Amino acid sequence: MGPLKNPANFAQTIDIVPLFGGDGGARGAAVRGLGRALQEDGVFVAPRLPEGAQLERRATSLLAFFDLSEADKLRLATRRVRADSRRNYRGYVSTMKQGWAYNEFFDIGPERALPPPAIEAAQIFAETNIWPARPPFPRWRAEMLAYHGAMETAGAAILAAAGEFLGLSESALAPLFAAGGSTLRLLNYPRKPGGAVITEEMPHPDGARLVTGRHVDACALSLLWQRQAGLQAQTPDGRWLDIACRPGAISVHLGSVMEFLTNGRWRATPHRVLNNGMARGAIGYFHEPNLDAELAPLIAPPPEQSRQTARLSYGAHLLQRFGRYGGLEHLRAKDPPP
Image (tube, rainbow, N blue to C red; front, side, top):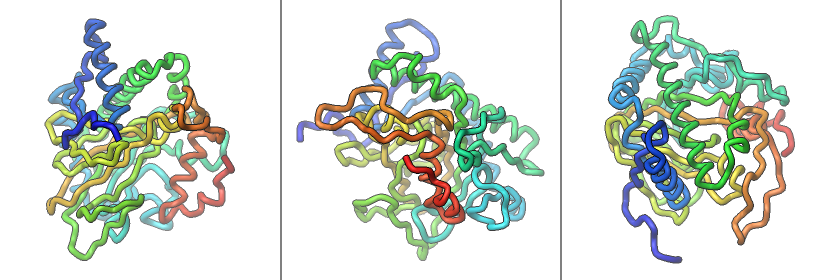
């Protein structure tokens, strides 16, 4: 193995503000910086976004969702929590039990209607949003949608820059995401009781005390904000990098969609959350392609790897992923062959 390109224990910091306007030289430097960081480590930290301090204020306020009563949250629950729920995808989920995560979360997508996918079973991923009858504060819903919109803009800019670094034209990449239903997820990690056991979803545990096990996300890019530290990302050479907790900062991680589109050149970034003995809040945004987008390679494979031949849509990929979760086992029977 050659020398480590980033031997530090923290993820690299890349200023991405030039992607949203400014001189070409600054934009080119941002494209090269984020491209190299994603290629070497699979992750980087963006210390600021155009919205600046407003992002931190908005993110912190949105977590007031978890102050709602248990009854109010359960009215929004999916089938993973309530067997009698008619919702499969958007809404409230609690995983506070033995498993690979100890948290609760609430998901929304864009308010705009999504085109129905060709695979009927994948229609659940175009599910409309559900909202609390009594929100935490009057403008909470508007703030949620504003945060989703800001992350959607950031995700598109980062994806375009990553494509530019890889030599992909905008016409090759952008149409795959034109009607995407990207997800915004509020996350709450209460203090984990000593009896709750967190298992690794993926192999090679190292004995770390966790509240979320090692996993990768089924999207193109994950844009993650954290109120308290604890998030770690694993590099392709196996090192765990801490994600610095900074006001107004997000970390950017590769999802499995990029693994398909780059023919394995860029692997999805494993990440996990350490148990620091305290409660923790976070927000994840997952930049997703159209449900019917074909996850076919857009670039040649690395020299040591043969070209992928399996083809599937993003909707089929989600059916494979979500059919593994408790309460959604019925999706496995509807999973079409790749």
